[in-house]
Length: 464
Image (cartoon, rainbow, N blue to C red; front, side, top):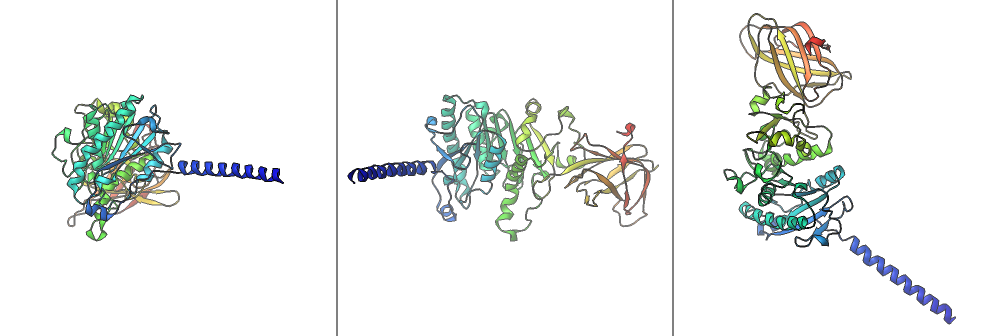
């Protein structure tokens, strides 16, 4: 009996040891750092600056590791031989976690095997006094430099550092880049903050000299964002101001103020989802883009037109060698994800003896009967005998097979005679996909304000 009791006692000790060891190990393994979640009370009271660096990798993509700015070796997951992406948020008026933070983390890690570091400066960014947050941007940059210095000491390269900054975070990224004399690999500015930074010299804001490649998306240039170019390439969706799908009145509450500003982030996220490539067109002005004057991208041949977002760096070598080194690119979007538009030139050769000026509304229909209408053509086209007039149009959807095209010619005059437009050849060619089959129609007449629908045919070789 004594031997049995002794055996049971040892078995109990062994069981307790295994249980306690597993419990301690589980507690340790499950300790996940999270973004600082504050509220409007913190914003009203103000918050002292405190920066947390939250590391995610493919090994710990659901459980952040907190990094020390003074000790890189303390990290379990950081691999300095890999690319490191820093995500830096901006002002937090209510103290809440940015709604896009988890998406950008998951999408980036699914796309590339990287160190992803979320720079949590919510304590310091949560305030109703904007100037206080602006004042903290330099201090955040100094903390980031200390950590990057540690990474460099253990074998990281500045070329592998990529910073994505939102609003005030874009200028923080610029300050870090300036500290390294522009040798960071890349900075992406997502609607960099305008107030307190507009009109400042390059060393007091984001600038194209802050990294080897700087790309910027401007979506709220008339209120919260920065109007002027800041990077090697600056993208201005819908002209950079009012974004489709965003509220137009104060009755929409907070969304009225932040929707345009935040759209830059969601456009970048769309590029990570890769549901479509958002094609952009380098141009001097939004009006020139709308009128089709910049849709050929000749300067980038044999590359196609630049795309927005994460993959914009494919055009890096073309952009950094330009003089001047700033390029503005324009494009339009739909009001909801994936935000893409699909662009075409519609070319007309007419044989009217008299010059005609007017607008042409264009619809395309697929084999299932779905019809979409073009959303551009802001300036009247000029039609002259035997000369080609080209109209630049965009559609919110794209059809694999176009079964019918509808055209309506109008001079938009309320009085006077109705005109005819005599067409020798109409050609539909995609600029989004230049390799796509070009469609034509020959010898027909458009009567003003009368819609004409026809089945297009593949263009003859001489018309391509």
